Image (cartoon, rainbow, N blue to C red):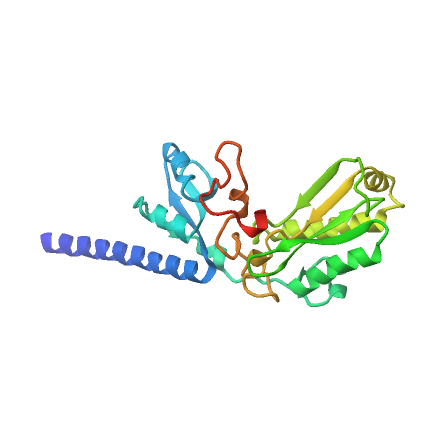
Length: 262
């Protein structure tokens, strides 16, 4: 009986060690290819506040935390010796249809390639030059354009009016945000002079819209797909944690200021 118990004990321990080693291998492979990892771990409420200073916690149900981490963050997390699981469902291949021409975006049922995105922004400005101009406000770490359109009745003039900046997909894998803002631009431009509410907004507000704030994250897998989009930028920085904070200082996440947040 003792031999059987010992054998079962050894098998259980071996299975646990193999599982954790396999989990570590998956994690390292993912970080090497994507620069970040999405994973879960168990945490007590009293641990939550300390752990959120180490990794980006997206969700917590009082027991299980769902978190993102870049290489440096994940190394700090591993130093806590907490068990974790790679959230493999997140990495399942997504069946996403891409638009390879602007015309294919007409029904808003596809995602634009990077080139189509740039062309759409250029087309907004060229089709509605009286109320829309396009500006390049910078370049991403990998050299992609950071684009913003300004919409106003006197679009070339800086008027004494309220100014609003809308920015989408700061997290490159949150695809719906950028699509909403592309459609918002299209809706405003098409309905100016037709819809009283929209006309009033354009006449009295200077509107700036930057649909894709993190194109390197969105097009991590290449300009022709968003299926491999990442939350962070090309340097593994979560842009939403990189902005100056009144309490935490200029670089609250411990990284240098990313080009996308300057």
